[in-house]
Length: 89
Image (cartoon, rainbow, N blue to C red; front, side, top):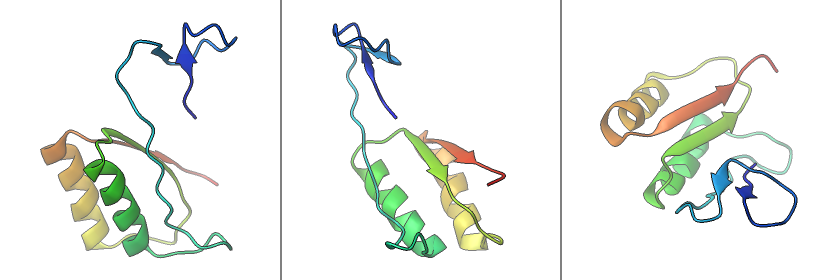
């Protein structure tokens, strides 16, 4: 969730009203909440292409692939993208 502070709307928020930021939303799962690692990577790549520097994910899985590990490692090490993931659902 994002909120802008200092705008007189009653929410303090994380960013002040003069910050230069935008919120990107990527859809990776179907209406039943299921999907594939590849569609999640596509959604993340779309957000990064649109300028995202912080990506927050909340997913459940039985494992990961080498392709996923390489993809997210590359984003962090070579593209300055911070990845945040919820665990323990």
